[in-house]
Length: 62
Image (cartoon, rainbow, N blue to C red):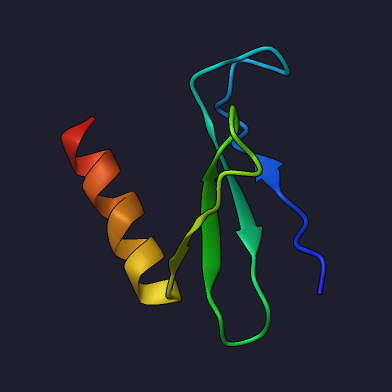
């Protein structure tokens, strides 16, 4: 399965060096998060619950 990575709509654009990319991994494998500057450097795999908690913490700390 090929993961389709996408940048956040809050990203500054194609040349923004400060963003991450998200991708839905294989069914049951969760959501991948990777550094847009190093797409071949691997990714962090999160369950849906972990991803939801991450976003909630980011919003809380913003």
